[in-house]
Image (cartoon, rainbow, N blue to C red; front, top):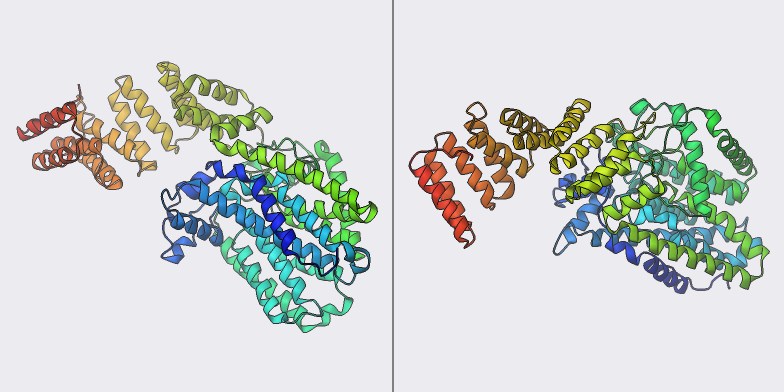
Length: 623
């Protein structure tokens, strides 16, 4: 293929191939961290003020990542019907992924046309670059970063790092026509990447390594190169400011969950070797690993030896300015922030971290195929692998069609993953499939806790199990499980709510109202919880359980949160007013309820009975 052949036909093929591979991703639901970072994220509900749209809630995936949060706010604003319909979010994720693939196409092509490689690879630069981008775009390992919506942070970081590198390549090209424009583009892309994910910290080093490997030795004496590298390094200031706000202090840091830098490093040796295997044979893919902490370095000695050998070869390659050294540096540098010594206890292993590193693996193999094999055989080999990758990616995205399907797949592949079983069990409780939930939750409790595991997991397991048992009328064991969950984690608001319901069903009203009060102290904006507590405080037969003022406060907050359009909440608010002796307001509230009540004789009769009761100056009492 001629060196100057137009690239746009191949770019169209890359886009169509990506679209086909990820067609099934559009049916994916919000899962995992999507809930807190998107569904419950009030900061994305409006694009103005911009300061809000640029700030993610603390201790969520978007905290300290303003560009990611802004893109979610744009998704929310552009939605025509349901702003939380995942379809639009998946569409933007795929566009980001395709954009990154097209930039990778350009990076590889221009690298192969650089002075140090042109003689050997120049005539095959276009097909090699196309093949690398195609295999990278279709690789099944990418589904975690593309189909799991909130991992947009990884995809955005990847896009901006590739844009930074591409612009730097253009800026340092001896034949560059507008080097200043390309320098500005590189620095801008680098800053946007720093505001997308912290892994971008290595981007200036990656650019330096590329220039060192593929440009002439005198390039560092040129002013444009010094300006470029200085501009890229200045973006570290932005990253430092974002990190200084401690956006995710509960999930990243030394000493969290029993992790030290050494135990994390030992564990990551096994994790990185697992990543390498998945880059070659992408099966089985797992949504949530629950990777156990390595007991000692001896346990992972073979992996340590392999990685040490690869790292040593990388350093030797960098010293000798060998292209393989650059690829190895990219692999290790990009993984280093999350897969070396800084513990991330909530996510020890995650496939999305291989989003960019897998490009280095592919780029190390494909050029040799085109140089050492007849061209037609190389093309057929690439096509076969690309089709295989595309089919696996197409099927893998189907697992994201529901949280249940995703968690069942995870439990099947990692049966000792207690977290996956708890999430699945809790989801089944929500679907009122209590016996199925019970089986998974009992299995989760039976799994011995591992060092470095999630300390809050046992409380969640006992809470959901207690709820499932109570729903099956196994009250005594259910309450015992809930009380154990409360003892394990007293700050868990949901367990107090579940206990309140269980106590109420057993007639322990004083215990019930106390539990509801404790639940609301932690979860003050849940209308159903506020209504349940308010009704008990307003209508309990036991006078010691009644508290008119508190009932009014709870009910009024629930009505405010729902826009005064819920008939049940208005009925409870009227009962709270009556218990407080505010019968005029109780009557007025019942009239408001009558105005919005459906034309159902039973409902209207109930409301008129309430009206007569409050008009006569009598409060409502529970049956």
